[in-house]
Length: 154
Length: 154
Length: 154
Ligand SMILES: [Ca+2]
Image 1 (cartoon, chains in turn orange, blue, yellow):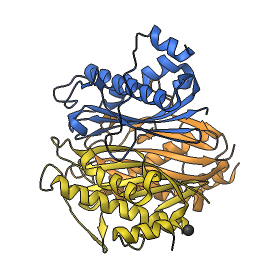
Image 2 (cartoon, each protein chain N blue to C red):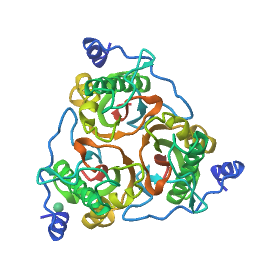
Image 3 (cartoon, each protein chain N blue to C red):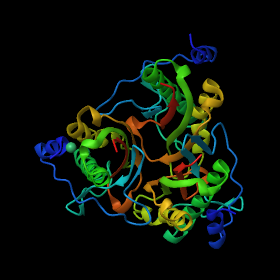
């Protein structure tokens, strides 16, 4: 059991089965040491949670949980891509999109759900650059979508 | 005539003249083997098609066609950048932005227009990571904008 | 004093102190020669300027100034990351997000504020690929957020 697998177990996080490609795109592309991950949605046990918009019916805390769940799905994809999570050298970047009304301005607090997760799981290697922006609508009506760029040893 | 040029001809796709830089930015930057492409709009014969928002006056099929057209313009830029399309080793990533009302949730079906094109043209090398998100508005009122990252041999 | 520092002085641009990380993410990650920068906001002397939406109460010129300010903050982060701005080999990409109403379609004219700055400061090395899209809302109510990818010598 790898160091990161052990850390996930300590945190009580069970990785889902990595979602299969939905179309003519793939969940990840490994290009040398750069692992490029498609945008992940807040799936939990195969179901989407926290549908809707921030600033409307969702609270920042619900958005945070949705972002954390996107992060867990990103980690599941990383594991599917490289097998051993100990190969993660650095989470380079997260791109966070938050379904937002025109007056909602706390996108950073929402995306922190994924940022905090990455540091809990990967320690300093989880500290990443990121962007957090609002969007009017996301696939399947989810509140958060997050993509990522990861440096891995191969 | 290259393998990919032949494939484009089979598909009945004529590449447009790659759009010139619109300002102090450029349509592509080649950095080692990484080709970084600026967001492309659905130009056809020098005119923009399918202006407007998904969820309002545009159908998913019209959005799909707009995304396919963005893809054709991306391929024209790739050719302008590296000359021979057979130098494409992998379409690494597409970033898809769909002008959407707050209730439109089929951004993936729209961006499939570009994803399907990449696989039709480049085969397995066309299978990419991607994100698909809604936006309230895009340059010149277009329905879709797509940027890309491509691995090329130089 | 470096060549680029001299150029900044000629332009009358004083770099701010690079903003500290706001959470479990960092303002930049240096991965080999690739410097990945988090989305920057239009801070001036520690205060945000030009809050609101394009197409509503902000003019294109105000949006342009906000984008220029995001660009100045990006340059401050680049300096914090690599010390000497003469190490910038190329601004590879800017990702521009503009808080927009559904009918505002001049995102490119807004993001030009950062694009023009990069070429003023870095010359040809400042010519970059970019995307410019509308968003309904941004962190803290700002009008513009811009992230970047830069090739640096290390
Ligand atoms: Ca120097």
